[in-house]
Image (cartoon, rainbow, N blue to C red; front, side, top):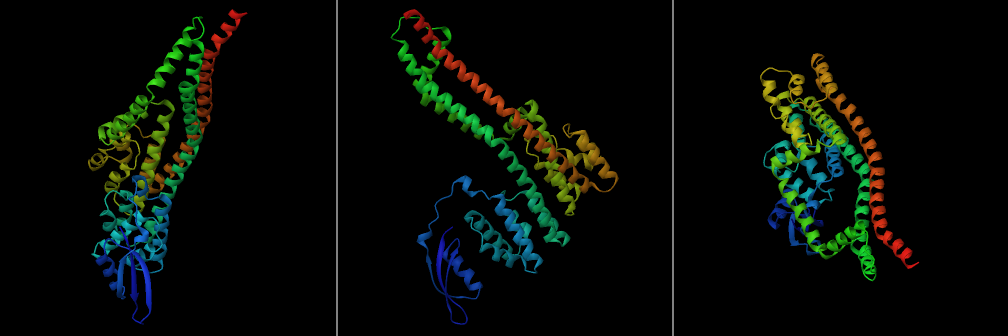
Length: 402
C-alpha cells in the first residue's frame, strides 16, 4: 500500500500538507474529502517506497496488539465512537502491515459492519478468541470491559511465551555452538591429521580409521549434506500444513517423557483460561467450547476435544465430557466439578490456569537446569572421543620412533 503526499486547504483557508497511506489516489482523495478538506494536489510519495515484506515481517507483535487494545479501551471509556477511535489510533500505528489491516477494519465499519464483523473479515490474522470477545462485548453492551479482560488474557499468554523463550535461549545457543564446533573439527581439523598420518607406515587404530573416513566423506559431500538437510527441513514444513501430519508430530512430542507433562499442562491451562474469558464475556458454554478447544497448542490433544460440544449437548456435564478426552488432569477435573456445583465455573477455570501456569514454569526451569549439563557432558564426551582418536596414533608413533 503506497504513501501519498497531499496538499490540502481547510475551510478557514489554511494550507496543510500531509502524508497518507492509502490503496490508491481516489481512496486518498475520498478520505480527506470526508474530513472536510479541499484537495489541492495528491502525488505519490516516492521517497517512501514500501519494500515487499517478508512473511515474518507481516506478523503483528503481541506488544503492538496489546497497546492498540489499551488505547481502544481508553477512547471508548472517554466516550469516543468506535470509528473515531480507530481513526485516532491509526495515526500512531507504525507497523505498516498492522496499519493496513486497521484501515481495512475502518472501511468495514464505515460500510455498516460491527467491530467484531470488521475484524473477522480480515481472515485468520486475528484470533477467534479476540473476535469472540468483541462479539460478547457488543452483545452485552460493555465492550470496554470485555476488551480489558482480553488484554489481561493476552498479557498472560505473552508473558508465558516470553518466559519459555528466555529459558530455552541458553540451551539452544549451547547446542548450536556444539554442532558448529563438531562441523569445524570434522571438516577442517581431522582431515589435516589424516594427511599427516599418510606419511607413516604404521597401521592406524580402528577408531581413528573410522573417524578419518567419516570426516573425509563429510568434507567431500558437504554441499550434498547441506542440501539434504535443507530438503528435509522444507519437507517437514510442507508436511506440517497437513492436519494428519501435525497430529502425528504432536503425538510424537507426547512420547517424550518429561515434555509430555509440559504439553498436557500447557493445554489444560490455555483451554481453561480461554474458556474462562469467553464465559465471563457472556458467551454460552456450547459456543465457547469450540473456540477454547482451538486454543490448545498440541494438535493431537486438540483432536481429543472435537466431540466435546456434542457430549454436552447430550446432557453430560463439562467435567464428565472432559474426563472422556483422556488427558485432562484429575486436579483440573475436580476443580471444574466444584465450579459447576458452586455456579462459579468461570472463576474456577481462571484458578486452574493460574495453578498450571506456575507448574509449567517450574517444570520448564527444572527441564532447562537438567538439559544444560546433559548437553555439556554429551558434547564433551563426543569431543573427547574425537581428540583421543586423533592423538592416540601419535603416541604409538612416538613409541615406535624411540
